[in-house]
Image 1 (cartoon, helix red, strand yellow):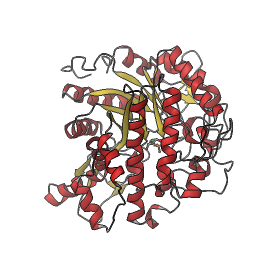
Image 2 (cartoon, rainbow, N blue to C red):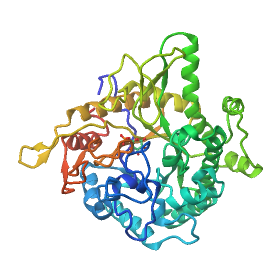
Image 3 (cartoon, rainbow, N blue to C red):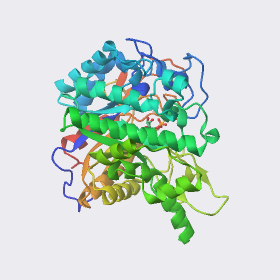
Image 4 (cartoon, protein in one colour):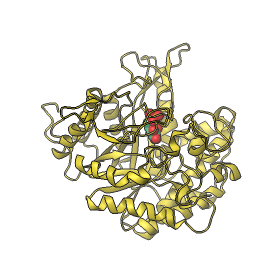
Length: 473
Ligand code: BGP
């Protein structure tokens, strides 16, 4: 850590790791689970879909967390995790999504996961919906394009809060809710590809999710006012490519496309600039009085975010662009990028944390951050296979130093869960070879491998960071 920072992380800072059901559990048809949109998306978020699950879909088995959760949680405990973020697969609890009664076998699975976490005093942080809409809801109702989804989600949320409310304090309603307009199928179970979807449908679906999110917050607080419910925003700061004021404005506009989602969650209403964007696209949202009230009365307790990269914006044509984490943008010539073209910008995390704090004044939780890289298994000192992932350590260290800076800036940061704390199936590529973990999982892109777990070099590094509450950074 830089010399002038005296241990800024507060007592009780929640250090840990993050995952999502579809990327770790496998067992896609076990225990009464229904299919989800992921089970027919073998090639990643933007890839083609299949009629039925196909053998090339690595998510069907993933890393078999469904059967190996106890071993994996023991490894998290060895690193000293204070918190573990995971999602509940909606279609394990309501296999089709529109049933009236939950599936007991599905509920019992997460009880077992919670038992293990409690054994080690690890706090759970649960995402209700992480790109896992039940497939039946996608096919029968066109996903979140339909208002009916709000009711199904409310029923699902209630079932979870009632069952686990005494054991789970921290909840997230929708993973990266601002990705819906860009990836309507994965994020919202909507059939049409983004480019064919009308602005009207796109934003109406967004509105349904926002109402459902507020409604879930209401239900949680009714059941137990002590429950903490957060939204989850894909955060990427946009910088103007040049000092041309038009570039500055373009960057602001691009950023606000994302921040609007946080504005609604934190302020309980749509901001004026966003209403203008809708008007200009000819969108007329169907918003009932009841919707307005539920949004207004049920703002979130905290804001969570994923942060991997920053982007640029400009009015100039013909500039180099990058794909990035779901959202693309203009390349920044001052930054290096990962092997997948995601621009590496640790200071951007400090910028985002300060922006969010200044904007909403709600506690912030960094629930995703990390480096996807190709890892090579090599024999360790005692012969046990390991990975010398100094590049990952450097990435995480640099970002955590900026988190420390933000905390010193006065930003209220509750915790940090690095993404893919154990290797998992990548969302964008649907492959194993883009790895994020402190723990290596022996599974290859062709589906071969023993599923054995091995500690990487970063495993020990992170254990030390947590043990010293950040002093070793
Ligand atoms: C986020 C998703 C995660 C995760 C992460 C890394 O957008 O919430 O599910 O996968 O990005 O992305 P990828 O796996 O494509 O490298």
